Image (tube, rainbow, N blue to C red; front, side, top):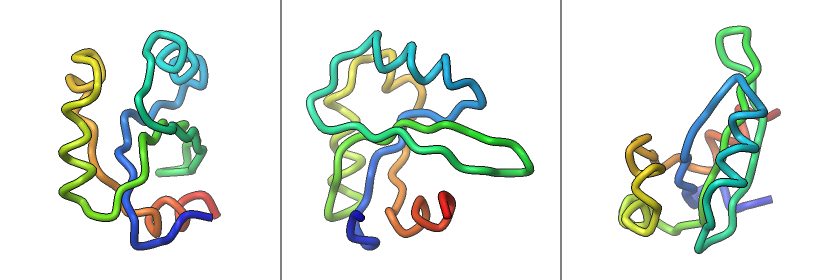
Length: 88
């Protein structure tokens, strides 16, 4: 339901839903988070997205808000259109 031209900062993608739950329990977030499931290379992945941003630059800047443990995973901006296509 998000505008397809906006961005989210993807914090991680894992085949393990337990790993995703662990991250959600371990850290506090300053912005809204979203968990979504998608298939890639025949495998199901679970991802955590952080915030909603108008530009890729805003999404990259928001990475500095994250705790060091999450910044070390090198979060990356993703356009909502890409995520919407993955989850369909």
